[in-house]
Length: 149
Image (cartoon, rainbow, N blue to C red; front, top):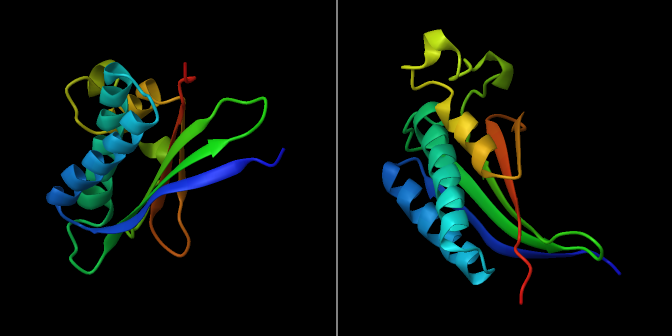
């Protein structure tokens, strides 16, 4: 059986903090519709919020001429868990993920840098960060969809 992929969201958002709230609201509704419980919705919401803030503030630097693209899909494949995937792409200069300080090292405990990526990794089943082409950073957040009863 062919895997199926359903697009739940495919939208550009302006580089504003309001966009963080707007994207989180739509994504959380999609997660609820797929059967994620309140705790999982909270984890997804925190991950999306951290990622969107990074895209707006650090990636696009609030530049009104740049957007944050958000894509959300639900994929089903026979014999595998359904996947809820959120992809967030900014139009900034990009960064090397290995250069982000580890927030658990003693000298970084009070630093804010690196916490968002750490939280995303803790709350989601899979997180991928890569340079987008031609510019920017693409973050992919994946969560297994709970089985329906």
